[in-house]
Image (cartoon, rainbow, N blue to C red; front, side, top):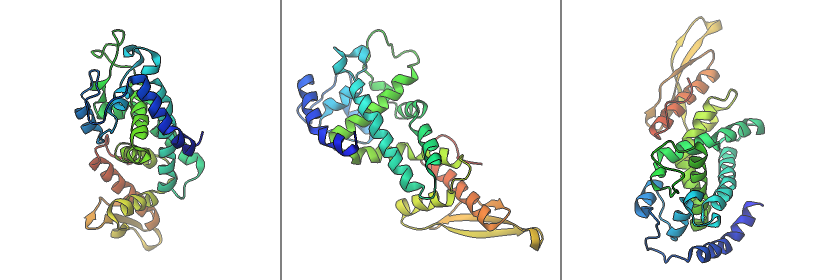
Length: 266
């Protein structure tokens, strides 16, 4: 089903969820062990219907019945997350082919990446589980991944695509940059330009800071600059290659600033 069709089902799904859960007035504490206020602070979004948030954190082992668990939300969140990541990749990489975009997407929406985001936000603190799944031992990667996808669905049902896009931009774009910078043939200059224009309202510039070698075989040391910020320069066998590598260095720095794990590229 397309996104528009899912959008149309949102209100009816919310009504069914309220009937199954008994409903929760807006603004009230809706937890069954979940610190709603702290959880919302970590994800950067305040729910209008906190019971959706609690449902997202309810593992099947801790639910009264399967329909009260986060399994349905995980099913919906998987598709929503995939759509928004595809949309993001489409706009960030206007010169990339389908195969390149597919490879990036497969990593960004993988179980490992979603689980890593769950750990980074420390969402495991709010997971509701039964006796068979104790939280004092390593939680399976599938549970961590499903938790993030369930949260995506809960945010969508509560506030639409806008809040989910913001979450993806904040938590997954650094992952996109990391994966993209490791993909041969991807246009780092294009990606840097997209991010720079969106986040800073300016186009990156490139400056040759040094040249080396004879005229027939020169190498160039080029630095990328966004506004007044200059990033580490990179060598290339020609200006085009040096600019691509300089853009990769700038993306590395931006990723580190965003709090992602380690620098991108080489």
